[in-house]
Length: 438
Picture (cartoon, rainbow, N blue to C red):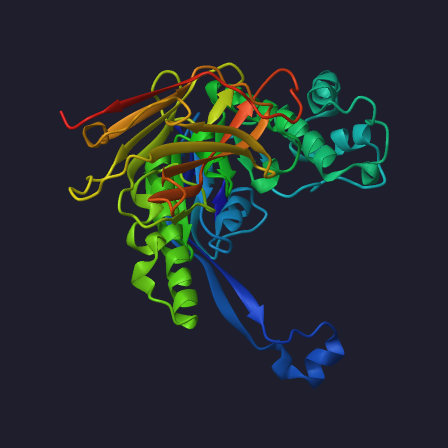
């Protein structure tokens, strides 16, 4: 059962309350589509129940942002549709406190043959606005969407990014108390995505409750106060965004390692020799990406690595001209390991594979000795990269031989900048610092 406000909520500070909600879907083996088929082929209607949500409960306070994470099919989007009353629970109760606005599916509520302007009136009226209210907000909606030149064209001529611009612009201008957002924010260019996230932060400050579904841990951590990790229809973890995202990524890393184990066994290789299994990346950083891989002989390795902003806070979203810090530490240096060619290397690549920057201790004429190698810090004084997504690789190299430790696709980060610098290899002022065993 889904209730409106005033039917069960006593705390005025709560916007959403979900109590013991269960939802099943019927999975038909061979569903009949006509009356004749139903009569003649009764066995075609046989089905089994698939439990999508299993007695989940949670509350969201006014002005909070809640993230829903989990692998595909875990029940995230179903939860959002239950909150929006597109679906109804088989058992349990959902209480919503206030007007709801949603971005569940791209183009939902739009008529393809009508213009963008006409669809604003249709879509906003679905959210409960009267014509006079829509008239007053029309210019703000069009301005935010940046579709002034196309607003009187049929929306069937719009790209998926233009659909998202219009849908988001309507959803945030209906003065909702609760905003439900599915993965569609992945659509659209970097500038508009940034604009959307800034708007979400703004409406959150004004007391709007946000529930967002995303596979981007960076998005979730930057927007959400708390996170629920769903697995097989149940709440696996719930709490602080940083902690829950770290647990989820570690679990995904375990699954990836197990699959990798199976691949190695099928090839007849020794599983224990693989560094991704012996020394999982999840143990050294909470910021690693889903494509992070580890290689090397592991005689000397990174023990911890983190990306920070100029204030020393963990960060993966930067602006042009800001400082970027990589904080790291090492494993114990073996007594019988002597290496005059030791070299710490950080490489930056654009997400499309373009090489951007290369930093090494040798390049900076730093000679590393055993006593120096407990922890270190690398700082780029001013980021001079075009706006976009980037990848940091970290390597402990020695000569031309196999690296001690190579962390590929280690940390993903984004840079925002007011100007386009084009494709370039960026030369950026940087410093290295190392601390010994004292």
